[in-house]
Image 1 (spheres, rainbow, N blue to C red):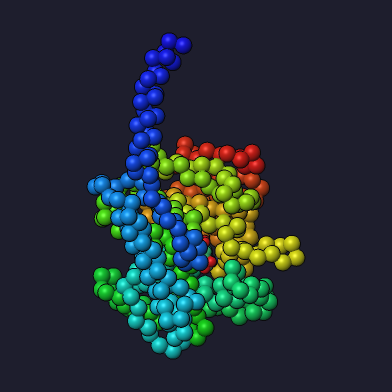
Image 2: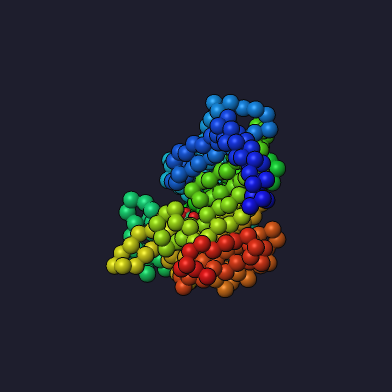
Length: 349
Ligand code: AMP
Ligand code: MG
């Protein structure tokens, strides 16, 4: 009793400070639709005092980055770098922006690193299935057999050295097509963080369709607590909470984009070897790393690899942690996540 009583005033002061702090500087948050998903930026704190209006303007600059990324890299936007590369496949080399070049280079790197589980030339399969598009369908086995030889990142010809402005890309086979849907959101998140940090933002959360990148720590200097979606439940229901500091957390899962036919679910993460949605006992893979582009590419790659190969591959990667959620309700964590992941749902262990 005595202890509690003596603590009371301090607690009250703290509560008031927190409360008045919240009143003066509430976080500024805005969402918009880019890259086929909802993108949200929330600014909690800045190094110099900025008005809410100035913070809003910074978020608008984030949306400009997203708009540029879409204009460069969306495969279904006429005139984008990716659309032009795909249209010219088997015919000619196409000049592209330094931004698209950077993402393609990264995409090829993770294609190589994952032994082709991630493959940026997945385009023909993405179009054939059109999952999340207007006419999703199940392609015939014959159609898939014809498309599979087109999927091979090793055939992509790129010109222009690492530091040069832009460069050019050639897809040597007609009907080959690049798709950057598995990596572009992460790239946009990294660019946004750079811009916000340069502008003096010290605490923020960037959330581009579940690709989360944080700046600084949570106000109060505690780690951020990020809810990991329960892949089997409604959106917003978490299977667990992950603690992170200044890192990216990206999840690839069967619940993000899919269609159902005859009681069977067909989701958007395709296995380049079979041409079909990866069905390997996983419901989702969450990757934690410093860069969102890396976490984005790897979450897709590890999902395709499946629980055994994926866990083994993740363990060999420096600075990368991962959580694998299986269809039987098991959550497999890499060692670095064991202390930081708290399971909240009784359906998982
Ligand atoms: P994510 O939501 O980041 O896991 O990415 C899924 C998106 O990446 C899909 O909607 C496709 O556009 C693309 N994609 C699907 N399968 C693959 C794959 N095996 N390798 C690379 N990109 C893929
Ligand atoms: Mg991804």
